[in-house]
Length: 121
Image 1 (cartoon, rainbow, N blue to C red):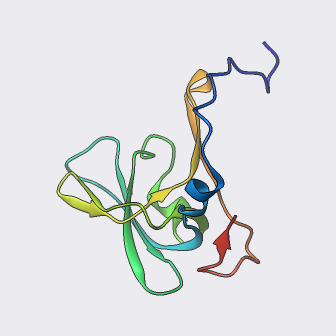
Image 2 (image 1 turned 120 degrees about the horizontal axis):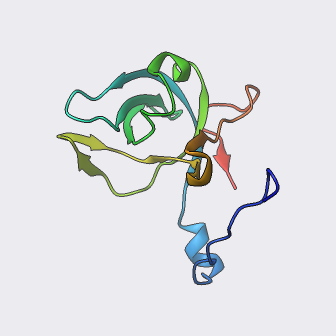
Image 3 (image 1 turned 180 degrees about the vertical axis):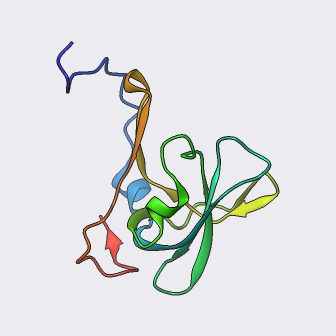
């Protein structure tokens, strides 16, 4: 297998443009990040979304140290219904590429020039 080749999983079912338009992706800046004591997988990120701060829980602890993320701009799905993980309410989902064949995960970082709160489409 070539380095950039991977066994493709099937695409999900097609959606309508209106379904996609419901998703609100924004550039957010990580202002704090910490390991979650009750979990071996979760990091708790506090991000600035351009209108305030919100908490994002993500299972990227095996791939990133908290200090590597503080100050970085990431892409977040901000209108995902809140969900509780390990007793902490997560108010969105960061976007990352899962690479199980390489036992890796890559967070989708936004360019430094992108303003915090900017819509991503």
